[in-house]
Image (cartoon, rainbow, N blue to C red; front, side):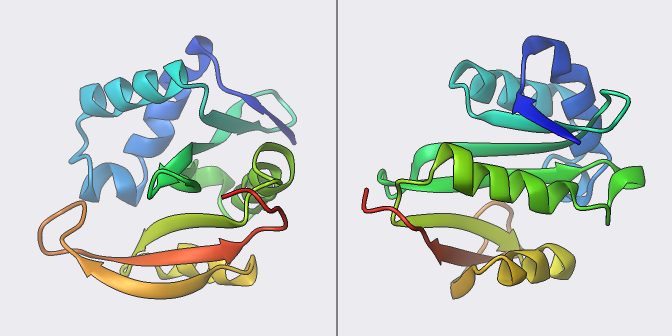
Length: 157
């Protein structure tokens, strides 16, 4: 597995991964144009990392904002893994990469996860994230998100 910053050449693969996920159906309603616009916006901010398999195929994407939570804490916006690559550690490795290589100096790392997404929530809990509260209708009406936080090793707010 290789982890690197995403480039324009990865856009089609990232759109396909997100569109094929529950995030693609529940939040983006399979609107590939909307997914691509979001990716291009984040790519301009240099806030996307991807995981490649042994064949250099993009199999997972992590989109983050360095100061996205309350304007001071890193925020994990999207973590999506290709359907045929789930359960192989790509998501966990991307999360660890973010924590160790991109945001090691921050005191807290935050994310939202849908209450319906028990598999992702369990991954985040295994990685040390704790639930703070539930927020109804944050992204989509009728859905509830769990705000999770992990205490980082750094001192930076």
